[in-house]
Image 1 (cartoon, rainbow, N blue to C red):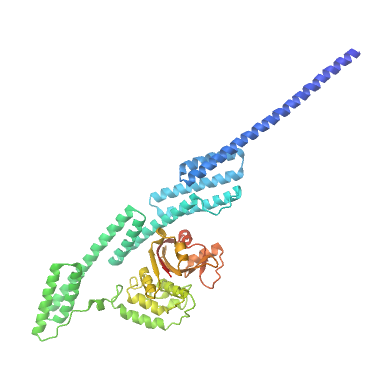
Image 2 (cartoon, helix red, strand yellow):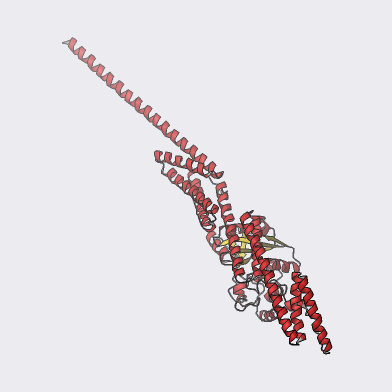
Length: 503
């Protein structure tokens, strides 16, 4: 009996040992499996991070197809890892890359307005991606990434192309209205902009317009001179020799401008005949008209009289010359008249140029009455098409220079100038830009005490100031972080075409 009992105990011990061995084996297998699974996940995550790094490198280098492939692989790995944050991040990268690719395609096909909208969306995606990077990886730098810089540059470049075609459209509209000299000026501006962009097709387009406008101007002058000649001939044959001389002289001056020697000789002969007939009649021979006095300024014949009327009206309006104008649509600014085009010569419509100069002089400490500023613009030929399109930038620069200030004038400053730095170094600046509605001048000063630019008489700056949450520390003007940023980031502003800095 004792022998059998011992035998049973031995068998039971063996079973216990076997169970222990199996349990230990299972635990070892589980541990090994867990370690292998963790190693697998680690490799997957390392591979995902490698793909992410490669995607960002390719994105920064504008290798968009490679960046897209890397991001899609990273997304697939993130899904296998069930990493929701990474999945969201990679979806955002894919949206950014696809949107930039679409913008490039639209830009290449010449659909610039749609391209601008697409690039703007890409810029929004880029901002969201940077926010994710800040949160996910603790990147605290505020510097723009290379792809953000590139997208903003594309937005600025696209605006320049839109501006080019806007100028071309304005030139074509003026040509259609037979305003050939004004159209010529726009084609010349378009040519300068196209040259600065190295846009060969645009240069050809502008050159063709310039050539055509010059031809039409010549044709129009030839027609005018011919009509004057015919009217003079008719008066001559009606023996109204003094009146005939007036027409002959007007025709002569046009032919002299055109350097048409044959017609010059014909007119001189007719003038000689008419003077001879008057001498035979013992009638006084009228002197050649003073064409400079007759022509007035480059904008409007008889503009000197209009300038005098405007000056008298403007000087009757009271201005507190210590108060800056922040809205030209309000009294008294909207009462000031400039130019001769009825209904379009008041401050609310065309006053941004003189308002900019007026504000600049207040900031410089030498205020002038608007009447004196406007009078200078009108009598120096500084208004565009009778004041309908305001004031020429070079006229504002010349006016400020005439007061003894050191003035620097940059054309298309975005292409050649660090706008923010130039304004910081000046006493005050005047910026002109083209927006989707028209052109506009604003006065800008840099306030070192608050490290902000204060922009006067500008609704886009007020919008940006509100968006940035800036405190103006002033009763007028809008405080913004960057003038260059205002131009680049305001959807309605196409490009800046003039920067006048004064010191």
